[in-house]
Amino acid sequence: MANPPKPAKAKAAAAPVAAQPTELPPEATFPPMTADAEAAPVGSGEPAVDDASVRLAQLFSHLKITKIVFVDDKAELETDAGAVIKVLAANEAAKEPLAAFFPGVALTLDNDALQEQVTARLGELDAGGVAALRGVLAAQSDDAAEREALGRLQDLLPVDTTAHLLTPNAWHERRDELIGECTEECRTLFLFDQELEVDDATLGFAKGSDIIRDMAEKEKAGFGTRWFCGMLTHTVAKGDEVTSWRQLAKSESLNLRFFMPIAKGALDDAPAFYGAVYRTLINSHCQTMKSLAQGAFEEALKDALERFADLDPIDFEHMVVNSSEVEGVSELETLIRLYGIIQKDQVKSQILQQARVGEFAAAARSAKDIADIGRALSATSQERLHKLRQEELYESDQLVNSYNDPLRNGDLFEIGEGDDLKLWVLIAQPCDLMVRSNGKRVREENFKVAVLAPLRTRPLGDEAGAKDGLNFSLEHFDHGGAQSAIVLFADATPANLQVLDLAVFNKDGHCQLAAAPDPAMSLPSRAWERRDAELRNHFGKVTKQIEAARKAHKDAAANLLAAAIIPRGAPKKTFAKYGAYDGGAFRYPIRRCGRIRDPLAASLLTAYSRFLARDAYEHDFSKAE
Image 1 (cartoon, rainbow, N blue to C red):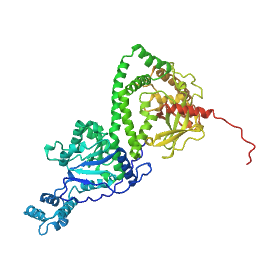
Image 2 (cartoon, one colour):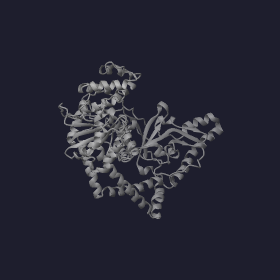
Image 3 (cartoon, one colour):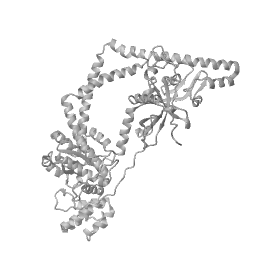
Image 4 (cartoon, rainbow, N blue to C red):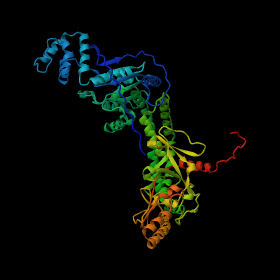
């Protein structure tokens, strides 16, 4: 089942950054914006730029986030001779815009007196001249794009939010003060650049992850209550935040709960920036829920394994071996069922412990509180959720066929070849499909035991429901869960289980029978070992007739007889072409390709039963044409 292509990511134009005057300390304070924001309805998909700005304002207001503190080594730009020479060395074209500030100076690296001459001219500049020079240096430097990103951050902030842009040194000096100002009524969003390029070892950190780790060790309770932390960094590509988040957590020894990366590239895309901030704000509560659940799962697994190991051998043998043989069920299936009973109860008992359930509920309420502001699922999120739902509803061919699983209600089959390939689903009462301990079914020859119904996929995006009980909808069937399908009851045909059973004996799910048994084949139960013998006896009778005709009337007559008498997968006329005989071997272009899981498979059977029992009315002869 193919996955749909991922949508292309949009990129907006960069906004210029304003020059900063010399008198400013190594912290730039951006005042709140004055534009009004009005509420807008929440839509689907990625929000528009204006809608994203409104939602961000609502989100900050609801969570009482009044301040953003961003720590970046690019927050302060030196305006000494060394900075000028560095720009000239990296960008020869910078000579022209810089010439106005250094009249009479040959701005070339060949000038042996360049540093002294530039230093002298810098001493002649007033505050306005230094500010203008700083702007030119920022625009011409090799990290100009990053400096522009810092300016664009201001444009994305909500109306009532003040942002503080700090150098690493300024953060070191003001750390305790800024953290102390955080309360549940005035929260702060801290953003740290990961690569800070800090040379001063006395600061105690060199990367944004070092700062976050220090906060987690000293002020753990503040995360998600008084502040939120993110990494606004160019080292992460837009759209790769979650993958990078896990990698950074491992490489930097950080708990996932304490941070979330935000790509600087998102500053060019307001909806993407909103989504990244939203993920950052909700992360702490979601990680709390996941951690609590993970702890419960681990304890439940330990308890379940202990209980499983303590099972009396007699009890275990009866459940897994004896009862499976009587019912014709795979021992592996019974084993999984047994473990599921034990594990499910243990998980529930662990989750429902008072302390854990209280903390989980509190985190869930906090996450729901944020979610109420509104967040549209991105296309990639929708893909992931569709895929997970598909896994819940359908079992893959590998899981079904790899250990020779017996036929079940809801088994999916590919029938035909090339352009003639079509999908069908097996619909049958489960107990009628069971092979008993003697290798037979109770009503083997009853045509009502099982049917094959054709299955049609709908066009992508078409979610129209089934009509008048004649069809059955299969949501999330294909294309990674994005495409639905329908089962056409009216076109169902009785299924020949003796043909379909051949899929059980082949790990690729193909309905074929070799001339001789495979001694290496391991079947799921003794009942199915006897079923193998039953089927070989059944198909062996056909082989004897064909080979007798060959002996008496040569190949041509034998081939004609084979085409006429080899068992069909169904009595429907088109199934006559689905089968071939070759020297005692039988091959059908029929392959089991998956399974509809319960309870959806049970719903399919119920719907088919209603279809068979639907009312029929006499035509109304009193109506005019």
